[in-house]
Structure formats: C-alpha cells, structure tokens
Image 1 (cartoon, rainbow, N blue to C red):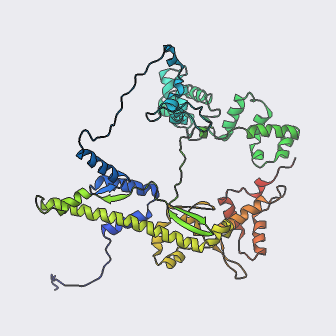
Image 2 (image 1 turned 180 degrees about the vertical axis):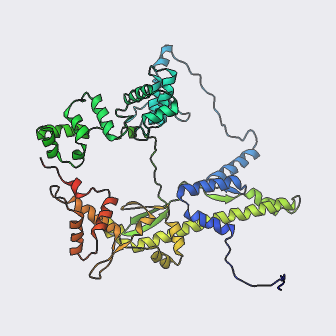
Image 3 (image 1 turned 30 degrees about the vertical axis):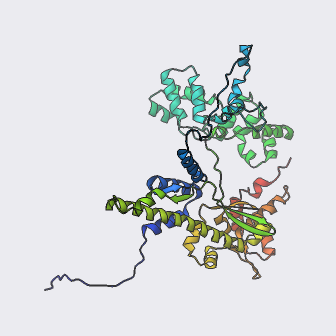
Length: 490
C-alpha cells in the first residue's frame, strides 16, 4: 500500500520573464507609424505625467508671467479701436460680393487680403468640403426621384443592398422574392428599374450582361458589337479577331470598329463611385545622397514629442501633505512615462541601425536601381548589427523608406536568391522580376515569348530559372501569358 506524502522542496532555477515594460517595448517596435501615433496619444490620455512638448510653450508661459507681474499702465495695448464700416453711397455694393467664393477671398484669419483670382490648382473651399457619394447613395438618390410605390421602393432598396462594389447584383430573382415577399413580376420590374439608372450597366449579374446593357443604352442593341459580346466574347478575350470576322461574316474593318466600341465600355461600372479613399504612405526613414554620400534621416514629423510633467515632479519632492497612496500612484505613473519615452527612443535607434545595415548590403540598388538588388535574409542584418532575427522582422514590418529609387517597405530589400550554374554571385528574385519585365517589354508583339523561351534566356546566362518560376514571377508582375500578349492578326 502506497501513501501520498506532501513535501516542500527548495529549487533554484533561471527563467526568462517578459515584464510589462519589455512587452511594451517589443510592441512599439513592430507598430507602424500611424499606429505609433495612436498609441502615444492613448498613453498621453491615460497617464497624467505625460505631456506633449510643444515648441514655444515655455516662452509663452514666461511671457504670461511677465504680464501678470506688470502694472496696468505697463501692459501693452492689445486692442485697437475698430473704425466704423459703411457701405458707402450705394448700399447695393454689398450684392457685388461673390458669395460663392466668399470663404476663399474674404475669410483669411481675420485679416483682409487683396482679391486674387484663384488659380487652376486652388479649388474653392466648398469643393474641398464636398464629399463624393458612393454607389449605394447615388442609386438611392435616383430611386427617391422615381415614381414607385412604398412596396416597390422597399424591394428596390433590398436589391440595391445586394450590389457589390462593381455594381453587379449578387442574388437571383427567387431570393429577392423569398426575402421581400413580393411576386416575381415586381422583382424583375425593380431590377429593370435599377438597370436603367446611372451608371450604365449597373444591376447586371455579370460583365457580359453589363456590357449588353451599356450597348443598349447607346442605341446599339442589335448591332455588331452586341452580337460579338453576346456570342463571341471568348474570341474577344483572346483577341482572335479573324475568328470573329469569319463567324459573323463581317469584314475585318467592321469587326475592329465594333471592338473599339466594346473596349470603350466599362466592365465594372460601379467602381467609379468607389468610396475607398487612397492610402498615403508616410516614410519612416529618408535616405538621400549628399556630396556622394548617403545620409539616413528618421522622419519624426507628426510624432508627438513627450516630456514628463514638471507639476507632478514637484509633488513628489514635497514631503508633507501628501498621502502614501498618492505618492505611490504618481511614482508608478512616472516610471511608466519614463519607460515609454525610453522605448520610443530605442525604437528609433533600432530602425536607424537596421536601415544603415540595409544600405550597406544593398548599396548597388541605391546607386543603380532594382536590377542590382542582391539576395538578403534577416540573418545577415541580424548578425551585422548584433540583434536577433525576430527583432529585425519586427522593425521591417510596416516601415517604409524613401530612397532615390522610390518608396519601399523595408521588407522589400529581403529577397530570396536565384543560384547560378557557374557558381557566380546569386541574384535577387526582385532583380529577376525586373529582368523578365524588360524582356517582355522588348519582345516582338507578333511573336511574344513563352515562359519556356524566357527561361531558356536565363539558362544561357547560367541562371537556374525553371519555366514554372518564370510563370509565377510573370503573374506577380501582372503580365499576361504569351497567348494574350500576341498582336491580333488582321
């Protein structure tokens, strides 16, 4: 029979513990620029000891102290008497003001400026404030102007809610009937109503139907372009105009004229009302060449400059009148604020070191362009600046650098290598992509090169590049296959 026995043992061991401060430093390292600004603003709101160091505040404060200590006779005159404004002999001059551009010409921070005719690049402020409607609101506006009953409007709104960003209807008539409780005839009438709205082609089920709706709107419902879209769209996709001419029994010139009309249509009509705003990139680092030497500059513009509140510092210095809980709270917030400032400074130093190492490894890229990009892995930079690979990975995530060759994400400089058969220097996959792009641009459009032919060009240069790899890189570059790049035979 065995008995359970309770014992206490003392054991000495080493263990790596991630403190909250260390976790915060790692988190700051991998944040993008916009995320870092949001995090800093959040910390300023949560920590009373953190303040934004705004240039000029100290001078304004000193000026304010001087004014408080001065007598009334010594104070500067801050206001002047305002002269009376009259309309002159002709009160109608008030109507001569261009009220449509009043804000631009007359509202200038309280000071009048001479009237200047706005240039082409100076839009009215009313134009700046105008918000472009999205597709749904644009169609709803047209629906409200239509002569429909409340029940029909409800069905039409349901249909509009099931249009994708291209303006295509993603449900069928049976689903509309089931969800809204209307009959088939009403559902089809509302679809037809929406298809008659602007932009032309909206409400279609697919690209083919959208093109047919647009041709009908142009009055070409029974023309050659409509017949091509209806029956020979697969020939049009491969630019086989000769087959279209033979199938339709129409001269090749008429086919080309019809194709020109079709190409002028919009296969995705809803995209012109896309409400997606452009995403602008603010570089974290600038690399500029000054006197034949590259200079690295961190972009601190827009990042709040932090400082610790002097008011709470004075509270900690006072020995009397303060409760222990209050002092403990302030002391804790003081440590948190100091660590945040230190972590941000460490983040900036780490980014600088990583960019400096990348510049050393990829010097030829900065001098000559993408074709001279060399293979590089995280381990190379980590060993160069004596850091861990995970740190390099965090630094290069969502960080951008402005270079003489353009703006690139830091991860762009880390590429896989393509080996040479003769044992020479390996090539970067990005430089290979650039070479493929140039080969395609210089090929004969009547006889475009296949993926195998491009692969053979690299083989002759002792570069191991399989046909499948060429196809993968070509697709990543957005280049069509040779079948679709071939100039049509007329």
